[in-house]
Amino acid sequence: MLFLGVGILLLALKYLEIDPVAAWPWWGVLLPFGLAFVWWTWADWTGYTKKKAVQRENDKRQARIDKSRAAMGMPPKRR
Image (tube, rainbow, N blue to C red):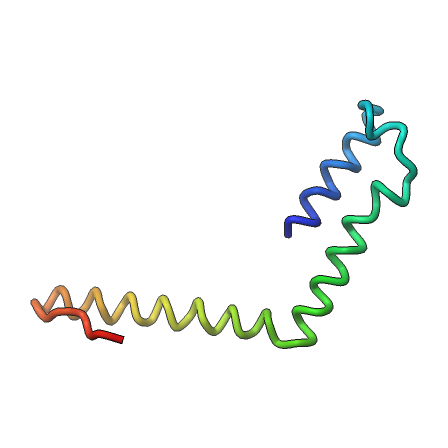
């Protein structure tokens, strides 16, 4: 996501002809988009994206369990 944000910023600076980005070649301005594509391809291929999604779901689940235990007056379980 960082690469995409940087790419959009550089693209806007190039389009609005703001120095020093206005003097840069187009491949330098568009490079962050290529890096974002490579990152997302690698993350999907290695399972990194899925692992992070599962971790977020597990964290939310554990937070709900801890909240319910606290509402019943029980201490949260140690992990």
